Length: 194
Image (cartoon, rainbow, N blue to C red; front, side, top):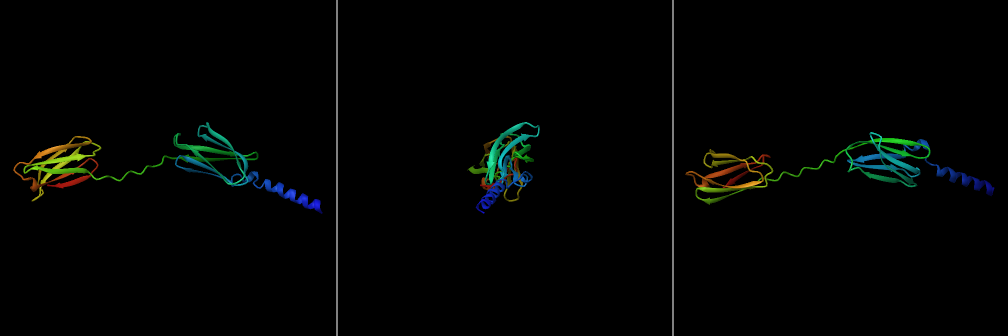
């Protein structure tokens, strides 16, 4: 009787060592991408396995052996490689599975558009000064208008990149009678009163 129990225990241990059989490798593995990173997941019990990554031309990029006695995640960083499709082969002594994955560039969020940095000051009764900084491109539109009726008294496009400072002489108008509308090539605008 003691011998029978020993054989039963030995048989149970032997079958538990092969809990994941060859047909279950696909069910016990997965491959995921996150932009240009690949994660290979192997479930507990897969045992010894080889992981290889190939490009779509069949060139082997990486290969390594692992032992999955517990759940295992194997990360790969493909930031130094171009985006595109790659093949991931996972093989054991009994079976091999292949996954095709695609990597993509991570879209960088565009920073919020900053306001136009345009500043004006009264130099004297008939002269105003305009300072514009932080431009990306030349082509800033400057309009000087009368406050009383919004009539344009001067209009120009300043072809100066990065920024500029300029004095405007007002013919017969006091600086407090006008305002400026400044618009850059990105559509940012600012209204300046004196």
